[in-house]
Length: 327
Image 1 (cartoon, rainbow, N blue to C red):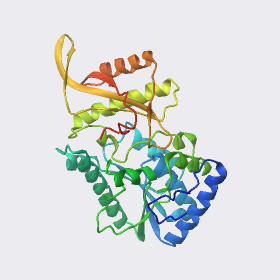
Image 2 (image 1 turned 60 degrees about the vertical axis):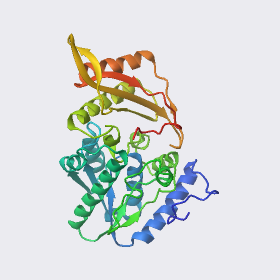
Image 3 (image 1 turned 135 degrees about the horizontal axis):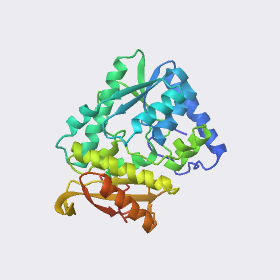
Image 4 (image 1 turned 90 degrees about the vertical axis):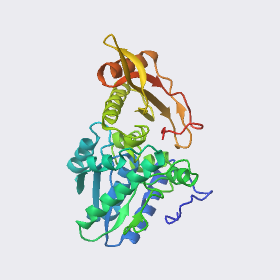
C-alpha cells in the first residue's frame, strides 16, 4: 500500500478478515517506523474509533515516542472526556495530556453560523492547541491523525470540510502520520479488533471531529449546547438500555424556536431532532426503524428533563440524499 497517497487504488483489496487486517497492520507499522525514525509523535486522541485505532497502531510502531493529547473543546458528549482519561490513561497507561479549552473554542465560535466556517475554526484551533502542547515537549516533529478515506472523499467533493483534511495551517511545523487514511470505517474497526482494542471502543458509534459543534445548528450558544448535550445523553442511554445495535444515533438542536405549552403557559423553545442510522462504509446510510414505545420514552424524557426543548422529531432521511450530520 502507498501510505503517501490520498487516493485508494481501484484494485486495493478490502480488509474483511483478521488475516488481511494483520497484513495491513504489519505494513502500516513498518511504514510508520521508517517515517518517524527516532522522532516523537503528537496524536490527537478524541477517544473515537479512528483516533483510538491510530493510537494503538502508533503504540505498536513507536511505543513511548507517542504522546497523546485529548482536548476538551467544550463540544464533547456528556461524560466523554472523563471516559477518555479513564480508558487511555488509567487503563492503557498511555502518556496522555489533557487540555480543557472549552472557553477558548466557544469564544472563537461565538456568533459563527456558517457550517464550513465552524468546521474550519474548530480544526484550526485544534492545530494551534497541538502546536502549543508540542512546544512544551522536546522532539515533537510528527502529528498523528485519524483521517479515514470517506473524510478525504467528502472534502474533495466539497460535501463538507473535515477538521483533519484541508483545514491545516500552511505553516504547520508537523509532518503528518495518517496510517488509516485509505481505509473505510468497517476496515478501521477490523484493524482495531485485530490490534486487541476492547469491543466497546472498536464498535463505538462515530463522533465527528467538530463534535456537538455540527449538531448545535447555526451559531452556537452555551445554553442550547447544554440542552443538546443532555438530550443526546438521554438518547444514548435509552438506546443502550434497549440493547439495540445501531451504527450511529444522536440529536441535533437547530437555531430556531417552536411554540409549545409548559405549565399551562406558552413556551417558545427549541425543537430537538433525533437521528438513528445504520451504515457499513459511511458513504451510504439507512434510517433505523425504532419501536414506537422507545420513541415515546425518549421523547417523554427529553421534554421532561431538558430545559429549553419543547418538541422532539425523528429524522427519516437516508444517505444519500441527506448526509450523516446536519452540518
